Amino acid sequence: MAEPLEEIVARALAEDVGAGDVTAEATVPEGARGRARIVQKQAGVVYGLGVVAETMRQCGVENVDNLAVEGQWREEVPFDVLFAGGPAAALLAAERTALNFLGHLSGVATLTARFVEAIAGTGAAILDTRKTTPGLRELEKAAVLAGGGRNHRMGLYDAILIKENHIALAGSLAKAVYGARSTYPDLAVEVECRNLDEVAYALGTGADVLLLDNMDADTLRKAVELRDQNSGGGKGPSLEASGGVTLETAREIAGTGVDFISVGALTHSAPTLDFSLLLEQA
Image 1 (cartoon, rainbow, N blue to C red):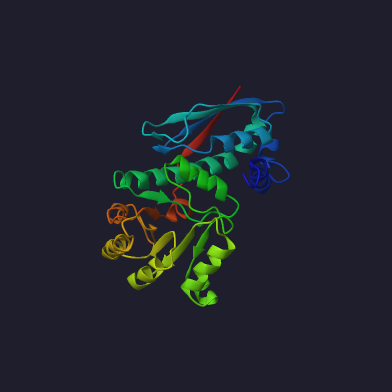
Image 2 (cartoon, rainbow, N blue to C red):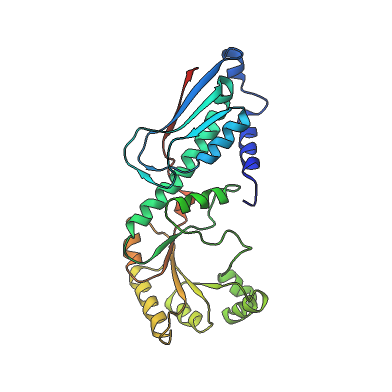
């Protein structure tokens, strides 16, 4: 990871625990020990147990055992996904931060799995976007992978995506593509297209991927036809549908023949999966 997991967790704990858990200090007997179970209460895909373990470790919990396999859909709940044992105050200090991470990341994985299932058999793949929680991008994108999706670019530094503002500043799409090719010859070039005229023009630039922005299913099908007619018998550029994709519309979009469907909701709107931490005195 670009930022070590230890630092991500430490920042989250500093936000929550601060100078100390005053409630635990006032109510938990010194030296008290506890046993805790984290229970999955809602069907879905678990992801983030490693983050939970690191949270527990930083709080002083000595024993953590994962009981679930990440990345697999579980329908039968409630189900124990993790056991931890150690100082009772440490378990209490870790509880909320651990559950926040686990619920959010599992929610991302679960929503991704639902989208992947919605388009199963079509040949298209589900992609994430850069619409992530600041500071949590790598964890959220890892959760997308756990749910069966694929990662789009990690950031502005590892892939080229030319949008309307880049074209306006470059002077034309052709100039923008030429600049991208000449500056970064080893990177694939993706171009955003808002209508069929832009698709036709972008096909002439030799772009590797066309992002079809906010097009309805009929327009997407015509874009696929344009690509195929201009591919000279080859595959032609990959086509990525994007914008306003929902679980209800994903399969129709996939059926148009596009290669990828990018869904910002995977990371910016995934509902939290429900977990509880149940603590008892050891």
